[in-house]
Image 1 (cartoon, helix red, strand yellow):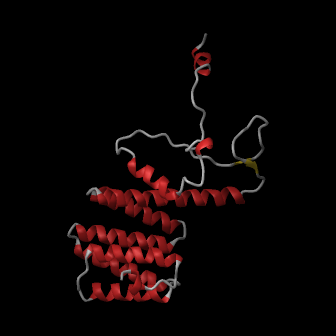
Image 2 (spheres, rainbow, N blue to C red):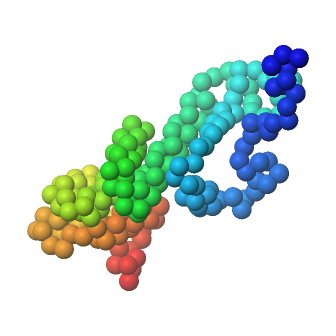
Image 3 (spheres, rainbow, N blue to C red):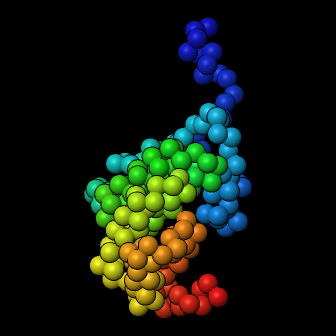
Length: 211
């Protein structure tokens, strides 16, 4: 028997989704998925399977979740969403590395995430990452870097179509940094937290959010 046939007869798992189909349900939320990623050992070897659910034509034996398409539109839209998720994971890596006191890796992750969001045409998300980067730098004692980044973030946000309360928050941040008041990592993180929430709720009250 040849090596090829011997390997073909081995019982191995087929490529599949995770969780596997019988265990996939609405209980597997983005938050649950994020918890699983955060729990992975840092030195673990991982296999990554990316499923693209489109083919030019369907095979008769295929049991995968896919469909035949003749145009590039659905494929390009799917690829863009996939790139967004990869960029979000890079941002998550940055926050994890910042939390376990690995600032060099966190800075690299934040910079990559910021570039990724900018390339995807998501200036709001890219600017949120800039606030994460500013908080990281101020924890390192790199105050001038942090102030410059915080001012840049405030100016970018104020140039976007944001709600009144978000604008108030950014004007407050800008004044605090400009006049060298108590600019702390906690302040920057709280501002970033509020701006994340305000993106989905423009009427969110800045005052009530922290009261």
